[in-house]
Amino acid sequence: LKTDVTIIGGGPAGMLLSHLLGKSGIKSIVIERKTRSHVLGRIRAGMLEAGTVDVLRQAGLADRLDREAVVQEKVHYGYEGKETLVLDLKAFTGRWLTAFGQTALTEELYDSHDRAGRQLFDDVSDVRPQDLLLKPFTTFTKNGQRYRVDSEFVVGCDGSYSVCRNTIPKNLRREWVREYPFGWLAVLADVPPMPQLFYARHSEGFLLASKRTPQLSRYYVQVPVKDAVEDWSDDRFWKTIFRRLPKTYHSHVTTGPSIEKSIVPLRSYISEPMQYGRLFLAGDAAHIVPPTGAKGLNLAVSDVYYLHRALDAAYNHKDPTMLEEYSQTALRRVWSAVNLSWRLTEIMHVFPGESSLEAKLLENEFDLLLERPCKQAALAQEIVGLHL
Ligand code: FAD
Ligand code: DHB
Image (cartoon, rainbow, N blue to C red; front, side):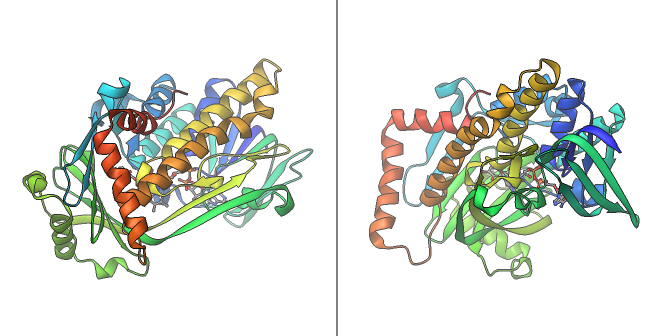
């Protein structure tokens, strides 16, 4: 097989890249390790930055979003025993967040891929990108048969355990890692959500109330990393929500049976650079952030936006400058999101073994936010995200 760009990984990063390249007349083949139904069954992120929505709209991918998504103009931050900080994103920035599930976005991307008749191989194994400095080709196995795709470029959109990233020689890249000593229990429940997007720090741990649609709630609570989903009955989960949520908000919660539960570990991970010869990385393949800032999916979209623009300039206008600068351009945004996600994670969680001094300083950080509109304005800007 032969194409312009081989895309390894059919998650949101890979599928959006294929879509955007297609619009610029650049051919691609997507290679995905899991089955299509597995990919479409995954429940992950849910809050989109304003710039992410702009990219989807310009790409003609916002029909369902415009019908179903819920606009979130404010973010509420509770801190046990204190006044709730209501951060008015719209007042500070003129922009807001949009609640639209990654699952729905991925469905849209697969549907449009089908309509455009672009090629995708799912349920494959032993994916090997090779000869990445000169004439790239990628081999993989599907239904017992070995395939080879030759292409001008290979893009690794293959998530946190990226095979593509690991083909970059160790001595040519640098990694930063932080594993957090807790995880999030994520629950999807078929009940109307709280109207507010609510993050709370309670002495027992973190809580986040979010949504997918006006009928579908998404909640997260901080749990020890060693916990298993089986440790968390629905009853235990809802009791935890009511303990951690300020009493004034209790009347906004509708309880009901959960329809999905999982435990997500929290970590920060960055690998630099995001390029090696004719291989480029995008999304989780290059960086992971703890979900407190809701940045993971948004960074995948911004990487792909920069990369598709650079490939378009290189292919259609014979200008390779943006491609040469891709890693630098993408990483500037990545580090800002890593920074925000790290700060919010520190302030809003309870760290086992935390010293009383650290706890007091983090509390002071919250007090400063409550008191100072200039700090609120800066936070609001970071949350809605930079313009793309
Ligand atoms: P992925 O979505 O991981 O897609 C990568 C794709 O590559 C997958 O389909 C995978 O099967 C495929 N693949 C992997 N290896 C290979 C290979 N060798 N060959 C071919 N294909 C391969 N972010 C938030 O902002 N908020 C959240 O609440 C949140 N919750 C999350 C919960 C979980 C359980 C996880 C894992 C992540 C969560 N994230 C969250 C992060 C967010 O979902 C990711 O940042 C986003 O999915 C990144 O998209 P991606 O396309 O880069 O990677
Ligand atoms: C959601 C996830 C997040 O990580 C976050 O910070 C806000 C919302 C969500 O899944 O809705």
